[in-house]
Image (tube, rainbow, N blue to C red):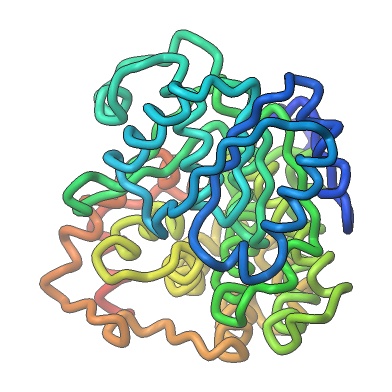
Length: 376
């Protein structure tokens, strides 16, 4: 079988809307479901950018009765999800709207399904299955990186903040993903870098995944190219609309490809690194990516060489990625983040799960430990 005959599956929202200023159409999309909506958002950034006022005005003009829930944490925990789910249940919306970064979009996703299914977040961590569809859900990202507006899972932190874990169900795929690059213009440079790296790593790991196929490869290839062209531009000049548009499209492609081809070892390690050392998710993914490329290179040399070219390098994929991180001022030395040699076994143990299973080359815990020790 040739590469074009490999199996590809796309499970995505019923409707994906991409384009600058498409948020102005939000009212008509909400009215597909009814006139009562719950808007879930984070802290002050949406308000300070002027985007909150704009969205509320759009919904008001459409005659929407609105419940607003704010204050989603950077690492939303199970207690906050349950508190907000009770509030949503009391209001009884026709549709939920999540507007914000990945944490907000994930939280709103979790709230939408727990409201209809009942139970606790921990029940679903422990194996309980969702049996009912979630409330209709419109996901609107304001960062370019997580891709969670496309996926069937939500990452939630434990009450004691000792671990992060996903709840997942195909019922959780948003009904509508509305991706308006203009909403991302207000992102500060550090958030631009971290979320943009998340988009790049998603595309790169999906492109080289064991489960990669011709449909996801096409999208991931373009996503890598867009991130390589526009990430540093957006980081250096947040008002560069073309760069914001290119990075938002890379993020959308990353969400589609990760949801359908899977990820790899870098994403597997990102959760324990993030929770233990307070690293943003994309940052945690990116710092291990060059070393992971070196481990995986024998299995996907052609794709990593192509990725290097797309990132503007004549070297190999690992060197190209390191050069990009250097341009963003990001170290790949784990010691820079407080990681000690004695921490490594726990990091490896906590990294086990779905993402590592899609890594293009089989790897033992001992291999991963050795890799991390070299990064200290």
